[in-house]
Image (cartoon, rainbow, N blue to C red; front, side):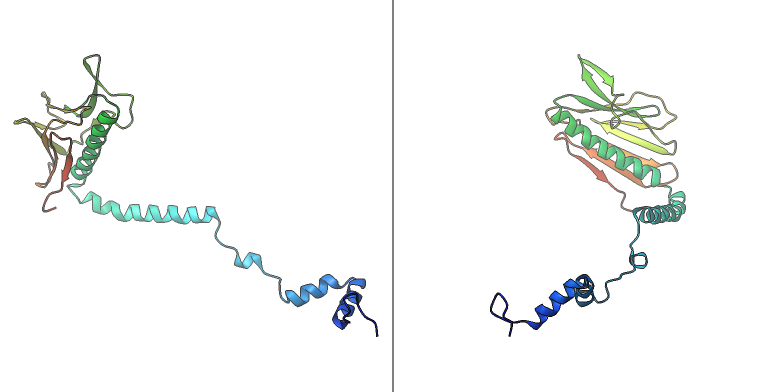
Length: 207
């Protein structure tokens, strides 16, 4: 009886050796370990990035058309959006004044509002910053601002002097109360600020 190098005769090893000599080793391993390894990748592939982006774009357009009619019938939409934007800008300006150690100011104009910075003891309109750029007031929005007991009503058609809100590097701010209202609605959106630099947005109780 033939003995292997390990002292143990294995018929399977012998058979495997014969298979190797006949060039069928790979075929036997494939049939033993992977009996059915042929997979149809074409049928099981996932979505491509281009297909996903197309689906997202279609959903976005569909939702846009669905929301549009509601905005057209909402007389408060422009006043609400403007109030939320102004609140965010005033908060950012307050942080910028403190972190940048500079003096800033907010001022209404006949057709909008702007931010100013103190340069060599002169107040200059900020024009080179996309965040604090000059912005316009929608014609349908009326703004009423009160600073130190002074109240001014501002609309896009009205020209007068407007009080400034100062945002200082010390973190202090001119106390104010500002109200935005659509000329087609009685709902008022208020923005208040105190001397400590806190800016608060107040939505109307009934919208």
